[in-house]
Length: 162
Image 1 (cartoon, rainbow, N blue to C red):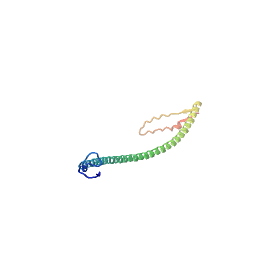
Image 2: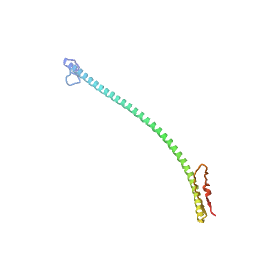
Image 3: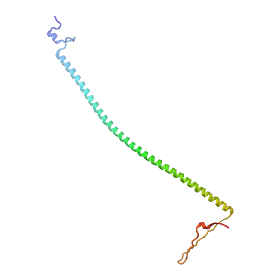
Image 4: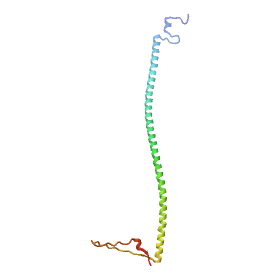
């Protein structure tokens, strides 16, 4: 007898299996396997879609964060430019003040030298006792007909004695 001979019992057994399984059970197993695989595929697709939505949301958040950072960088650049401008102005004013201070210092030194000369002359005159100060006191009683005596300027009051 040939191994492949069809008999009612052989119809029920699968040639590759040791146990006897009917075609209906095989079809149910196949259907169950297909449903299981489809269920797993559906779960994978759902997972991928959820991941994609999370990725898209993170992408939007990143874009917003990047825009905020770009705005902050622009503001920082503007502030840096303004600061640079202000620093340049301050440096310019410092240079002007420095040159003015030098001029004022030179003037003060010249005046100081002049004051020292005047003080030296005054000391010399006091040592020689040839210095005299005349002080006039003006009493002014104003009446309708009176005249007021105006004293001479102060430099005329200070003179070298005889």
